[in-house]
Length: 376
Image 1 (tube, rainbow, N blue to C red):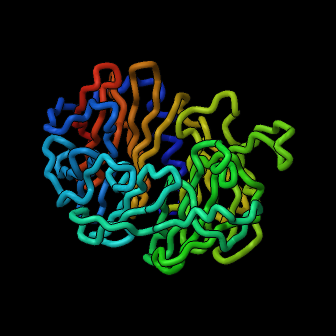
Image 2 (image 1 turned 90 degrees about the vertical axis):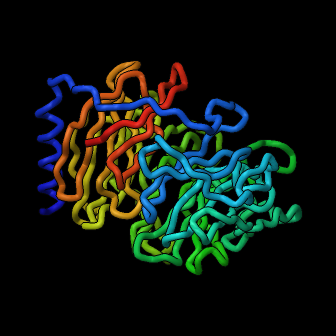
């Protein structure tokens, strides 16, 4: 089925159920032996598509995996993950990929080394992967060959290209030493992370919403508050794209959500395996099936949204829409391009999706209780 047919089904699905109250999704409260309520040791959630399991990282207790939606957890690491020190992988989110058995951790390093950790045995043992050099005497003007020096925020892999990855970094604090590296920076590696090159020449966004790294192209969705002089407020939200290896960025003609209505994850971009490029911007879905030349815009249900994409296939994808303070409605986008309104979750928010089981781990954000939710 073509991408245009999928869009028609998507809009029909949203339109046909918008006036019907969604039934509550089946859920079950779960108890864990891990102390998930320790504010000094917050959980780091992840999903490993190669082994079909949820990931739970706790700096003091270790890395755990669950293959039943969070009801049962098994310790994965051999002790090299858990630590209270800032230079251990337990203080960062876990990212799976690009091959089976490979996991990365982005520790909260505040710019100190190492910036990344890697495991080649599915999370059992961890080793430093990217030892950045802060270069205190580095020139004030950035260059494309400077060493990665700042906090690692996100790591993206190019589907179909195991040696290609993009890294988003940011220096978290403004002080005399950190001012030199303040701001978000984007890096690329074509040799499996052996070396990184800074990506430049775009109109310096101050905040990244999302990055899409489909084979042959990279796109960034961002918010820019000031102009290049940092004196004029412009509040611009846009999407820029460029070809792999190219130096020219092209602004894609999409409409972002109004800045004053910005909500958590209101701006997401992704390319499916059929080549359709999608932009979820506030209450609009914009899709291009002609290599970003033209876009069609469709209305979506109003309310703050969170999108959960399958790391390998994009589909199935799950869209959670907050209808009221304590009610979220969940939609499923399937590989066969059908869209289904699954039901509602009361008083809870989805933390992570187990795509292999069709389950979600949800949290009661008032009482800090955890639930396994059936997404079927």
